Length: 111
Image 1 (cartoon, rainbow, N blue to C red):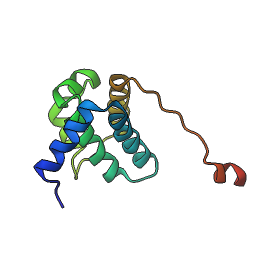
Image 2: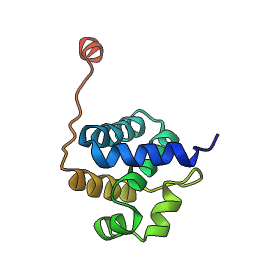
Image 3: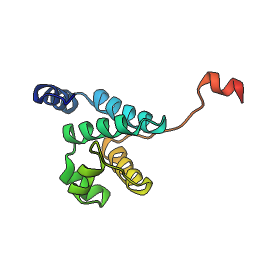
Image 4: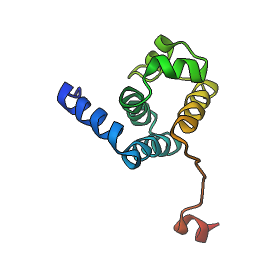
């Protein structure tokens, strides 16, 4: 089901005024991708980009044409690891965050 214009506008308004919300969107996208849910991760990344930097600015930061970025993060898009890394690196720097991986407590006990 496609998102309504009002919902997307609500996300944009909240993201522009709430840094914690923006960071949570970006974190959710990364977690989805790392947990194997690429379609959801791409959708959240697309919402994040639309609500924050925009595709033209991401083009400059990631070195990937805006139309290619939009296709990659679209429902049928299939970004390469190199392109996904460039996108996430640019967004991470733009947001001023750093991501770290850690074992979940229950995973650490099994190791």
